[in-house]
Image (cartoon, rainbow, N blue to C red; front, side):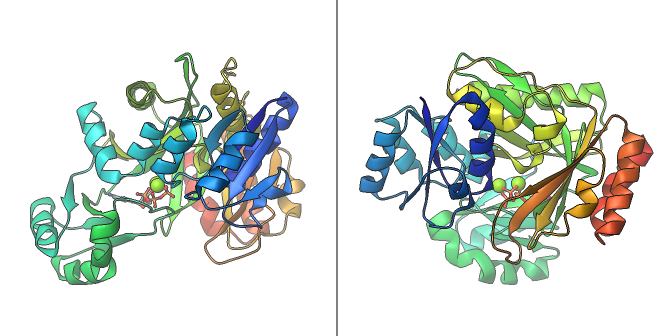
Amino acid sequence: MTTVGILGGGQLARMLALSGAPLGLRFLVMDTADDACAGQFAPLLVGDYRDERALAEFAGRVDVATFDFENVPAASARWLSERVPVFPNPDALALSQDRLAEKTLFRELDIPVPDFADVATREALDAAVQRIGTPCILKTRRLGYDGKGQFRIRTPADVEAAWQALGAQAEAVGLILEGFVAFERELSVVAVRGRDGEFRAWPLTENWHVDGVLSASLAPAQVDAALQATAIAHARALAERLDYVGVFALELFCRNGELLANELAPRVHNSGHWSIEGSETSQFENHLRAVLGLPLGDPAMRGHACMLNWIGEMPDAAPVLSTSGGHWHDYGKQPRAGRKVGHATLRTDDPATLAQRLIDVGAALNRQAQVAPVVARLREA
Ligand code: ATP
Ligand code: MG
Ligand code: MG
């Protein structure tokens, strides 16, 4: 019996454990919180990722280790990798934890990126705003997620407020200034690379964010074949350079028909949740197959899928459950403002039916604004 260890016990670990059950896998999840939601399905080891005793216990109980949480300290991942196979490798994890290193690598691989500058001091911020222009966005280099650790600079008058908000973190986690991209769309490539180098990608997904948090995803994204091929080629180049094993997501902006890379998420990704019901093999199953060195499954889609995130609290399940092709995921978390507590996926054979079901579900749940941009995109086709 193989035991997969997962660092981090949130909904990603939970869905990994659920998808691993048919494969006969066991899991051990490590998290700092004793109520981590993956603990409802897998043994939970409560401990700090920096604590060698906890890590040693974890290493002793698993055959292979992977991540649900991308901000596990790289040093902990390295320590662990000397005792048990760890995928993705700690260097790939470390790179994707630093927005500056990540964007520098994108450039090296000829993957276009928004303008960016390292910001260590207030003077450097002034100079960077001068060079990049406004609007722009100041971000922490490390430890940001769900749009946290970001400040939008609309005009030069906002620079002082931006420094007040984030300047204190310049030393500990670093700061980066990025040009604000007036994109037409946000897209992501979710892809997987096996231990033997085999590479597969799901169809491109279009994503909508509200306040920096993913709100809805549509797959396949309604883009032409050339754009899709370019996006997947970027993802492949990154995976090969990093000798990446497992699932990852490359987040992209599309502006004037051109792709600009935003960030690499070194794990299964929220924009791939639709693959549970919408594709032949889900991102969760393929991640497990990859880290275990098993043959990868086919990521081909079955029709059209839209995922809606539930943030803060779960809505009524009945309208989705009573919709043909409607699927419900409740992460078993306590409600809390801004927290991802669940999602729904609607899957249909054709885009027109998907648009109608989204309208119906949106009305029943009073989530018209959440479904509206997806419906508009489907109706453009
Ligand atoms: P997560 O890891 O949860 O995706 P994050 O905190 O790492 O989020 P980003 O992905 O950098 O943050 O930003 C969150 C969202 O904010 C993006 O998906 C995008 O909608 C918007 N955003 C970020 N950077 C830019 C930019 N340079 N130009 C325009 N919009 C941006
Ligand atoms: Mg991120
Ligand atoms: Mg992001």
